[in-house]
Amino acid sequence: MANVVIYSSNFCPFCHRAKALLQQKGAAFREVSIDMNPGARKEMREKAGGVNSVPQIWIGDTHVGGCDDLYALEARGGLAPLLNAG
Image: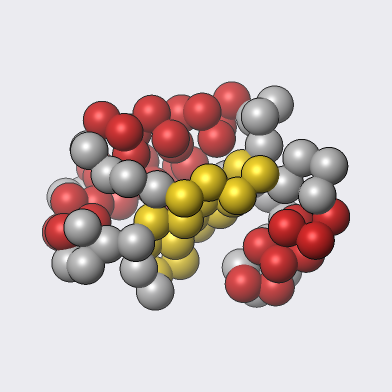
C-alpha cells in the first residue's frame, strides 16, 4: 500500500470523515495534527501550495486535497488504485 499522510485537527468533522474512509479502505496512514502546532500547519501549507484548511491528504507523492476531494476520488474509482500503487 502507498504511504498515506493526513494533516488534521481533532476538532474537524471533515478530518474524522476522511480518516473513516481511509480506515474503511484498509489504508494505514500517518496523521499529523496541526492542533497547537504552528510548525505542522506551516509545513502543511507549504506542501499544499498555500492551502490552509484541513484535512490535507497525500497518497504517495499525490496531493489528493481535502475530504471532499478524497470522496470524489473514491466515487470515480480512483482511490483504491492510488492506495494500491505503493
